Image (cartoon, rainbow, N blue to C red):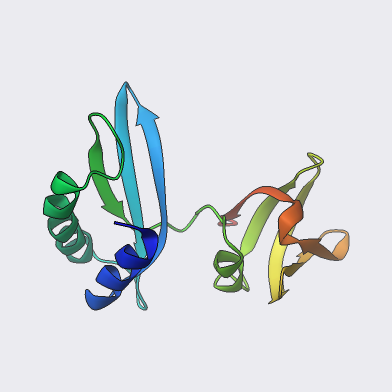
Length: 141
């Protein structure tokens, strides 16, 4: 199943695909599906999606070898790996590491095409999405 098919299937369940990832933890391969929904993702949403995907992935595994399926929300502090993630996180705080290893910490102000405007301690900084190595939202306590 490709990502477009997965997105459509999830939309039919009333949730949206945020991202997928493959992780190795304690010798286990984990295929994670992160979902979002207006108003927040419930445990029931995760259960419905897991029960829907499990039989499909039993026939068409998303990864080779032994693996485990995990379905969850991306969480309050989540990776921003797509331009759409930044657009949906306007107003939130983010830590952004650029390809040159410099870091910007601040509030996401706007997204225009591939340009992301972040208000940091140094003022407003415009960053091109292609210059970002990794980024994550965070909660200021």
